Image 1 (tube, rainbow, N blue to C red):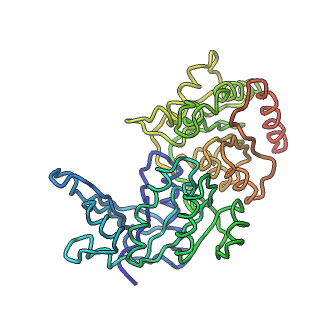
Image 2: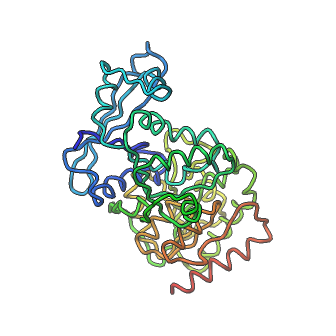
Image 3: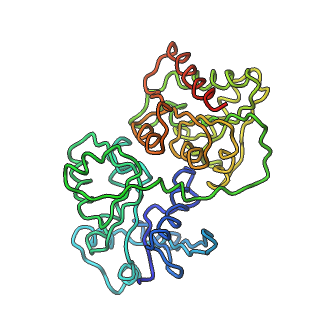
Length: 378
């Protein structure tokens, strides 16, 4: 057993609470599979380009408590030249810290953001998420692909890269059935598993939740309608959210607006749920029975809020997962095929609707579908 396990993208403080949930869940999942053991430490690398900037050499370290054990996480700074030599030629400089540590890595565990093993968010993000995979692959460190959605791929070039990586992987876990026919057709072996966020437990905190509560996750990606590669597809989304809030508020329900991907200090205006929730809240002339969860919460605490809802409507996939894995009835406002696959994988059929390029005149029909599912839960 080697000292380190590389969990790519590990960050329990990620602005996207779904990505943070993957980090918490990865520890529990790997433990359950017998792949992570007490005493091992979690590691990944941060590559920098400016050798004379002192702050670039700072090693980030924190302790993360999961499964009643404390895990040490290291983010190690590495001058990009070392990464380039390793990635391009498989050369490891044995006298450097990176060179010494890389020999102590048992394997890389990669979730690629849960749905980032795809080019739907653009080529740059797809390739960027695999940077450590490319580097560690060159020196023969085994790859475990953690449960995630595979694909889709718009470009053959990206598909070819993905296929090479999957052929190299020692183990492939998938969280849904969206791509398994293709995996079968190319002879790849895989194992089905729940999304990593299922393994992260909710963490209670001091909040009062009224009875007959309706949670609505408002996505900054859709509300801003400016997210790269998806911009311009959600003109009607703000109106849909506005009318959903009023629909349930007028039924006497308490509506909770719940952000799931946000940064309170440096919001990305094209993708921040807190900004979107605030805009949706401020738009309401009558705010009776509407609660805006305006708190900077860690991922397990957001999951706790969602777990206390009577019914949930989510646009972020991992906000929906928080409901699914805590047995909260829900409906998904989908912008990708991953939603339907993830819902059906968990026995939930006809619980999603695609919101890409919908028109205002379609909103009443969508609300009727949501209401029908809501009535089935009463």
